[in-house]
Structure formats: structure tokens, C-alpha cells
Image (tube, rainbow, N blue to C red):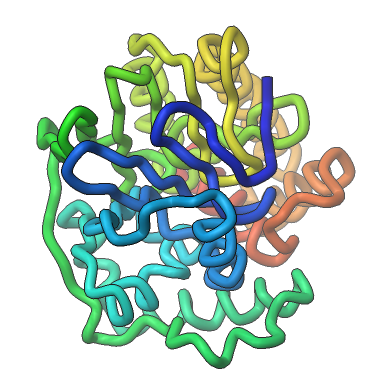
Length: 295
């Protein structure tokens, strides 16, 4: 089953935010963690939902970034500056988050996304922009984040981005794969292997070996039960189909990346007209994927 609204998922696990972008709060005996950083404009929703759902915000001491794309780090600066919580990310993510051009792009894209969602009003009271004062700790393959009674196991799963990591909580059988596990758009899964499609597919096979009762995605909510157990396997199938389709379009466009990206993008939005990413950004995503396929 797919759930796209904020609420309690399981014992001491909540989904917060909106349908198009969300974050998770996982509570342990000793402390709690926010997983993912979402789009900046979901912050007012997240803060209100924490109150409405009775989440003990005093226990939240950490925020885990699963990768550094703009739509996954938007609320991080606020929580770091205002709540003084520890921010965790992999080494590659910290490299990217330290690049002035990358930070400028993240801030710009988050502001654009807020306007497109008609959610910009009132955001100026929050300090949401990334600057060089946001820093934190580095996590890597094999690390464990022990909250007391709940433990997140960290895996490096690049392919969607060069800095993608996933986290798994074995007690709940909850997988936090971010976009590395596929995006549960409508009744399918979009395999967004942006930076390295082959590596994306390889890491899907790895993630598919874990027993999963809760597939906690960053876009379009979470998946539970039998569908959660099948979800990454479905993403594997969709990735094979998308790869073949991109190869065919690339051949039809005689290897021209720009025209092939436009063709892929046009076809995608015919099928998914209300997808949360704007067409201009999505065309860039297809160009990245096609560039890898062309190799």
C-alpha cells in the first residue's frame, strides 16, 4: 500500500511534509533523528505536523542527509542553525555542499520550487538558505547510528547521485533508500539513475536483498506491506525498461544528446504531466542519464 500523507507509520516512526517531498522522524530510546532534508517549502508543514502528531522534538538530535540534491537538503539549514542538531552526510555529499556553485544552485532551485508549488508565502521568516556555516559529521559504508533500541545501518549506494547513501533499520525492516531505490510516482516506480545508470542498477540489486516492510521514499510518501517487499524489485524492472527506451531514442536521434534528452523529456511528461520536478530540470536529468548510456 502507498501512503502519501503525513502521519505515524509504525512504532516511533513518522512521515512528515507533503506528497511531493517528505522527511521521516525515527525515535529511539535515547534520541531521535530526522531522515532526509526535503524541499525548503515543506518546513512550515513539518513543524506543525510535529506538534499535531505529538512528536517529542526535544529528543531530536540528528538529521541524516541521504544525498545532496536540492530537493533533499532544503530544511537542513534551519534545523542546524535553529535547533543546533548534528547533521550527518557522506564525504562526497559534504564535498558538494561545500562548493559555492552547488550551494547557489540549491538555493535557487528551492526558491523556484516554492513558487511553483504556491508555497513561498511566509517562508522568509525562516533562515533556509545554505551558506558556509552548515557543517556536520561524515558517515560511511558500514556505520551504524544507534538511537537506543533503533539502529540505522548505513550503505553507500551511488548511481542516482555520486553521494547517495541508504539507511536500513532492521527492527522495523524499514528501508530509507531515498531516490536510490526508485520514486513511487502514482502506481509505478521511476528509476532515476541520474549520475551513473549502471551503478544505480547494481545498487538496486544490492538493496533488493534486504527484507522490507516499510519502503520510506523521499518523494510521494512511503510504501508498506507486500508492495513494499516488491518495490525495489519493481524498480529493477522499470530501470531495465527505461534503459532500453533511452538507448532506442538515442539511436533514433543519431547519438545527439540534446535532441535525445528533449525527446525523452517530452515522452516522460506525456505520461507524467503532474510530476513534481519541472520540465527544464527533468530534461537535464535525462541528459545526464543519456550521457552515461552513450558511453
